Length: 153
Image (tube, rainbow, N blue to C red; front, side, top):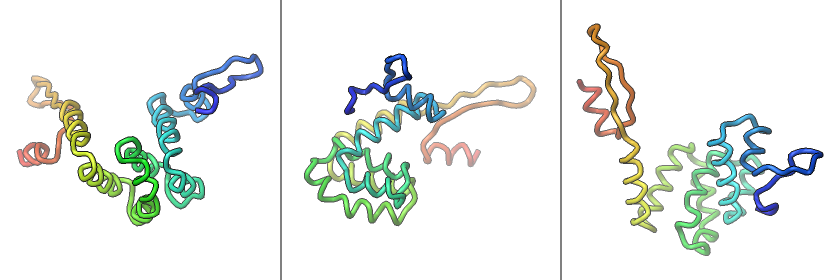
């Protein structure tokens, strides 16, 4: 960040971390503010993508998805691929773009994809509580294959 990650926080001369300032000024959660800052930093490496978002041709969510490629694919190749990435992003919604980006990551850097899959596997859970009144209550995050079993039951 150009200011060392600090933003002036008023006339008092105090400064605040960029994410904290964004959280307050943008009325977003701390997690969302941090995500926006990380995306903005990553998009410095993709200037054509960044400009397309600023021009309103792509959404910030498209930018967040494309920012996943930064640091995982060789920078020169990524810079050269920007026109193609923009064209793909224009033609699909952010969820479909995420599938495409996942494919690119699998093609270019399989070990990182394996690490992402392990992280996703660790996030999965199924919590059930017997309410002892003839019903159950629960929360879950499951992969498609596992949810098919639950839905079938």
